[in-house]
Image 1 (cartoon, rainbow, N blue to C red):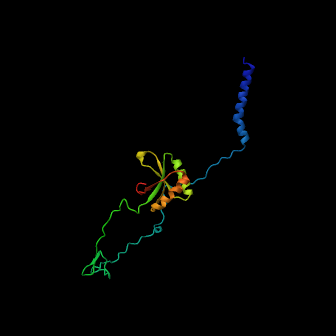
Image 2: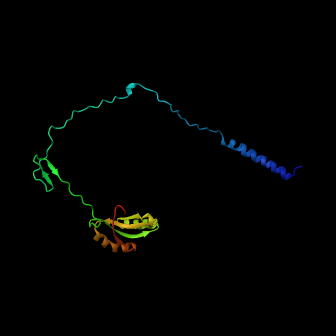
Image 3: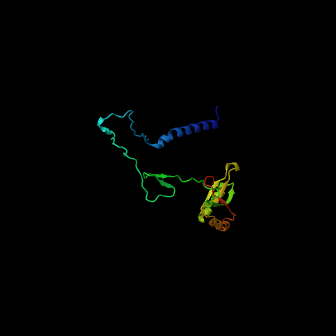
Length: 187
């Protein structure tokens, strides 16, 4: 014989099972099924009339010919490196090509304020400098030296202008800057 506790336990389990199975259907009421309306895509488009397409006209060829005599240019005042031949044709001598000097006075300059291992600190310093009106940038250092960020102000052609800004930058950031030549190929 089963004990009273076992009988009550079995009865409770049966009531809970009936409640879990049938009560949701009772409380939901009339169920609505949603089915999306869709149209099928045809596999091959229907072929219409041939008149739908426009005919591309054939290209027109124009008769173009060269002038019978060579074209000559007459200059009133010949320049120093140009010479005029007897027929009036101008012979232009190419100007000698000079390579730019590495130590050219017209090269750009930058103020390097520091090299940071943490890029967030470098970006915070750059945003502080930009808010103050300076043209500041973060450049990654060369890969052989690790992941370092270099903070610079500039570039500017005027070395004297940047050297006067050194003290202002030191007051603003607390960092002593260094004036360096700017190389656009390897900033």
